[in-house]
Image 1: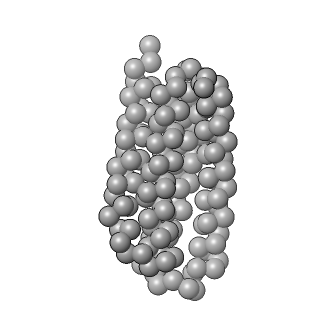
Image 2 (image 1 turned 60 degrees about the vertical axis):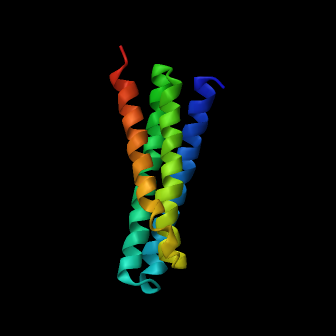
Length: 128
């Protein structure tokens, strides 16, 4: 798949995940506020914030890939998606379903975010 198509798809999925992040944030602020204990609401809120940050990161990676014609920037964006599944998904599971076993997955998702940002920065640093 060429950079143009893959970056366009990355941007579109990033927009979708940002929209879901807004809906999740609103759900947390309005519905869960009275249903969850403060620590669980804080975990949920952290998940929504990081989902938004990394959805924007996906969009930015897609735009950069199109601008520079570098497919590895698209890879960085998809790594953000994997991080969202692990980091945000585990926080949502802990907060909403009480799945404490998901706790060890959260830092793996954080590490995935770091790897994504590292790849993104490295590819831009190497540009001539």
